[in-house]
Image (tube, rainbow, N blue to C red):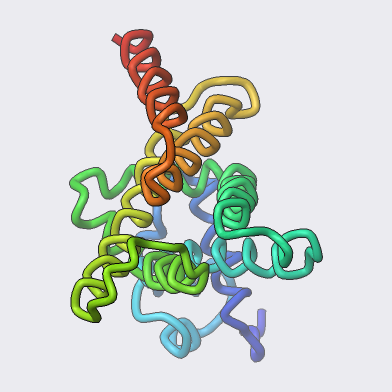
Length: 218
């Protein structure tokens, strides 16, 4: 059979994800993967240097798809930062849920933490840029250096919040992942209330939810 002459990045990603879902493991080698999908090994390296590079791109693709969907919504464009972030979370986790078997497989292979952070590096870059673009209000100190520190702390805390939500979602066994939806709503609202130095009702409510879940798990 003649080798495929035309091959796109998406073709490789799609074939790779199909292999992972069918075999619950990565291909043994690029050579074997290329042979099984009827293309020259050199074609793979035109787009990716390794299978881990594909994993990184897939997680960024989840982000890109989420943003593409949101930006088509006139309602989303009129939302304030809080509701834009809530919309992002719900749409992003719909994407993850549609590809849950792949996502769990990819992240479970990197349970030592540092590896998973490397795997999500492209997602982090895109997500923290998104957070910056929301122009979330912080304390008005009127000092440039302190403002930079606040903006960086905001980006890093938002990223940590996303990671914690992904971990909660991976462990969630509730129907339609309804507990993850609750987690998203309470955690995002709590974080904005802290930023705005608002009454701590939602923060306490979120704390109660987490405590209840921990007690139930134990």
